[in-house]
Length: 362
Image (cartoon, rainbow, N blue to C red; front, side, top):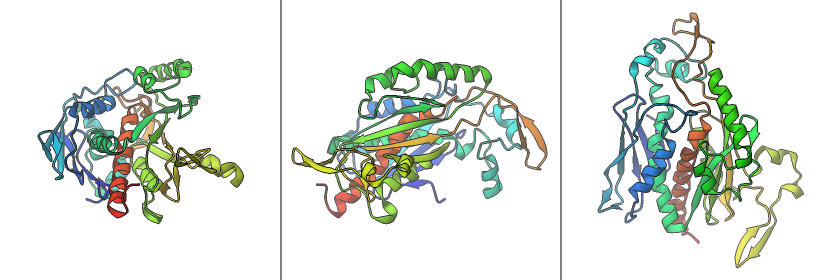
């Protein structure tokens, strides 16, 4: 059906459901001869998987991927790469009573309204479980970008609730992120985050958050005019993620408060390369990369599965009260970090291949 794929030159199509036997992806357009590090791909998948600490879903998934095609002697062949991940750590009986209920904040009602039928086991197709094969596809794209252009992509939690990191995007250390159980780079404020999450866990509640992403070493020239702008494609990919309600690049909504003189990035030349003194544009002008780091933020709403009583209706329109059981993510932004990186890699790789085919990479 429409809406299952992303990208044009580097195209990723995702298949499966949350509580089906398997989920997976087909990657088309990957250049041949790329030596893939499968361990690195698994490491990225491990960063996304549930059960890593008490603040995320306790679902016990091994999340081991297998590449079925498109790889020969460890190198990509240029043909479609098919990826499969077995679903294991779920219990369908936990969802039986939800088959006739529209859970507040979930896609239950909208899927029912569109299709007249829905997979209520874990949300089926609408589940965030579907981001697992995206992470694998993104890890493949990331290895193409790092190997051929030295592009680096780093995302992290910028804010949870009203607690915001004071570390600038240029100062985030990867070691701090891997140390943090919540992918938060500000050690001075992490205790506040952990206290907030602990309080919400006791209350059976959840909270939203913001993920910031920095993409370094992208050459100037990636992106297309008008409808296929680099930032527009990044925005579409990110807003397509589960629970995302906002996207901004560079100064984002803050630019509405600034004058042209305050917001414009002045050009200069450093070591023979065109640079800007500031980066208010977030590395994109006119939908095309300008060679500066691409910096954007993604806003995630609070996870709708909470252990508190909520009012809703069933499929017959009858009013009922619901309290969702089980251990769910207290803040979905935490596990979304590697997914944001993966989608960023897919979009940038797609535009790299477009640019390479149309005008070469300068």
